[in-house]
Image 1 (cartoon, rainbow, N blue to C red):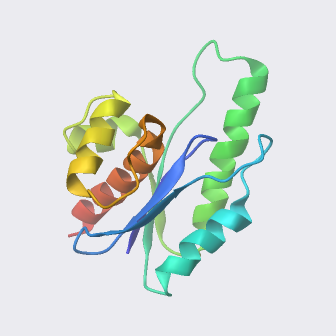
Image 2 (cartoon, rainbow, N blue to C red; image 1 turned 45 degrees about the vertical axis):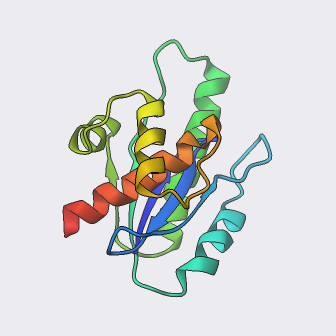
Length: 149
């Protein structure tokens, strides 16, 4: 299996198999203060069924002119995504957005990611505009799958 993690409070995770078929996706569960890693871990584990898994986390960073509080919250959610990847004790890696999006033929526009994911996985729960985190997490997983196939 291939797991993509789009970090952040509005981030998500997406899981596909070695054929590129949709397995599952979900949002980063949080309480407005921190990501609930245990709940996200249980969600993923419940559909993983102990299959081997590779993980990719989008390597992101705080934006210039972002406030101190926002930067701190962003850093905490990025750290939570890294801890989630490490908790599975599997091989995992980081990829910068510009790298995977270029390789997938995408722009920085999240609408492009949402449209591509909807087309590739019509059964995935990607109906809302705010599901772009799920779309990007699935596409990250697809990027990883293509890199290793």
